[in-house]
Length: 157
Length: 286
Image 1 (spheres, rainbow over the protein chains, first blue to last red):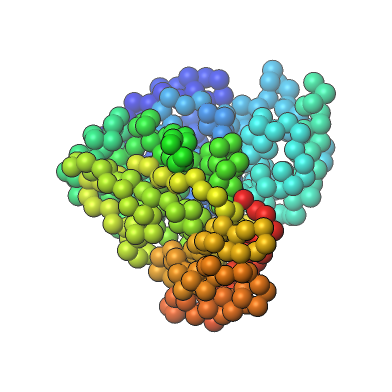
Image 2: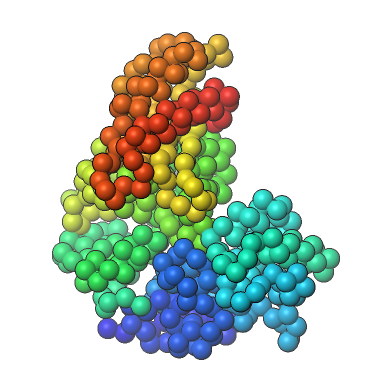
């Protein structure tokens, strides 16, 4: 049996008919064609599927689409404003904080959720926040630097 | 994507219990961080998921008549961040803060952690050490029982069909607590965890103590023999060392092939954790 759900994604309202056995990740990628959010482990361990739902970072692979009914979702595609990249996105570029880029959307969304809650994180705060986002290309040094830099540039705005 | 199932979202506890009772192949869906992963196995997919997240009365954190009441739908993140809990029951927020990742904690609930009944679940030893009771509601009313009596074995609780865990009740008390979790990486299920709550006077006399361990047996264990050794005694280094020996024999480590570490290692670990936990309590953790 299909369910009618209403979700707001990156500021836009959608009405969709979905089966209960679809995840939010499935709906974002396959139905809304927002493929920035990645499919990694699909069991809540790697964080590649991280999106922000009602202000909180969540693994979209472990949220049923029907559970997202009535909620406000932000994906990586929703960060830029009027064609300008978000300070986090700029910082990730400036600090070479990605190689293959697969972990990056999830990593940035986790960082965004962190900075929304804690605009002046310490390095320890950042490390704790990204504990659920695995990067297999490199170590996390540049990622942490980028997030720290972004937190300072957001402060200046 | 999972194998197909039906989905319903009741508005009240009573409605949820009724549906659960009437459909024998149904499961309650709270945060989903355990259930939805288990359901990746086709054999574990129930016919019907009953999403209980709309039931508002299960989301409270409040202190009433000297008792802390936590609704079963309160998320681990909410426990981690709650002012009431970090100030007066720090043991719980410490335990919650070390579970999974932020993403998991934003969805996972304390009720889910209890009902999933993993022997290594992190919320269980602190709740047991704090003397927690749980309230179970079914079609024929509610009852309350000590949390340590809630578990039958790995993944098994006393809940019957049509019953929901609604609330966790913790008495306010004097005393201090400590929670320690041993893992290799930060985002990992405990290899072993321990919670100690004790009322120890300024000059080191232990008036009361409760010790609970996870991943030390088929369910979270109250270490009563070890407690007896320490209770009504002055806490000395020698006594703590004796207690460490006792606890290493009191645990019931898994001897299965699939166990992550050997029973011998668990026995060794239990000594280390006990000594560190007691030192932490004496050192003044809340």
